[in-house]
Length: 170
Image 1 (cartoon, one colour):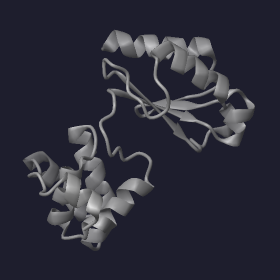
Image 2 (image 1 turned 180 degrees about the horizontal axis):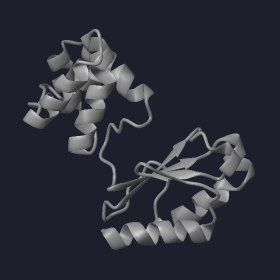
Image 3 (image 1 turned 180 degrees about the vertical axis):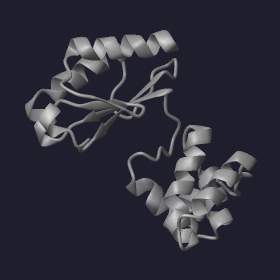
């Protein structure tokens, strides 16, 4: 077990019945427990909003995997959040195509509008801003995702409309 996990989470929390049910369902699609690790982390995140050290240990215990191995999976995939995030996670693409078409200016606009930098969450816990290296829509750059929705050909005005819509929903 890594020192980070051991020092911040001396023991695993209990997985909820819903999490166990969903993990068991995912296990039917994979030949061995190690292969379901990422899916199990996604399931925990779906219910908890992020993957705490206690949750990571719970998944590792449940799947009988070494916690360090699961931590490697969790930190490799940028869609697994290892600390609390806002209700709306904004993933702003900063790939070459998005950079050439103004993502730095859009990032500055979002930062001014929401008062947060990359990796930060607004005081009302409504937004978290995270950079991502590519969202696979270079022909429609600049691009960002909010939750599961991809938004293309961004301008400050379209970003303001998206933020306004999220704020209206609360």
